[in-house]
Image (cartoon, rainbow, N blue to C red):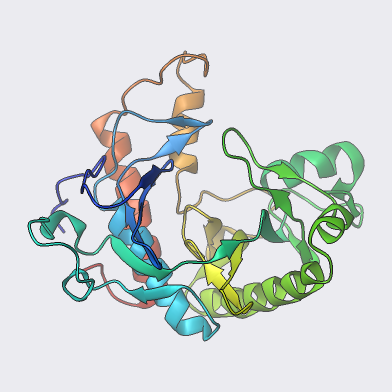
Length: 295
């Protein structure tokens, strides 16, 4: 598939806009327009080089899971021709990368579920035998499956890293809703992990975001089970005592770690070979999960 022209930023001139690391979000009153650009971030920096089709992959995977999971969610449509956007807006760059969603009051915690040992959890386990304060059996190797999935919430940082917190902190902040979110997040993770395993992918961990509609009902919001919010590993590489390569931007992080970038100044541009391989990983994640190539 020939790469599409990468999209780094949108300027639609409609409503207030909030720019995240990847998404441009437009406030349309009772609804929001979320546009997934091809920006990529690492170590709390937005890199100067885009990954063609990355935003389209994130949108398509989220749309797939919202439909497959069968839970209440915020997505209304991904069809830009059905969004009734103001005349004069060029829809072509938005096609395939835009979600019209219901507004929700977002819960101020990331609902993280971990099923395998990796990342910050692996580092903590090596030091203390725990992951986010939860004790685990001795003798687990890097990339091993945990005895059962664990729920490890994190605060939502407006800049920098989210911070892992004990479940008790979340429960104190939002009350009984914390128990509901823990149960639903674990249940969704387990179903999604079982499906992904059938498709040759290990869902090592993921983070969910939840919101409440005006009527108080829970909605699954933002992106869901994408390579940006999850660790996807090739199933045949998992469980061998090492953390496998993943279908996400870890490949970019690894390249940056090998440069002389100090992480305190603007990051360097990515070489074409790194861009191409990162794009391939995102596209392969979509193909494996859905059984078809990205349109």
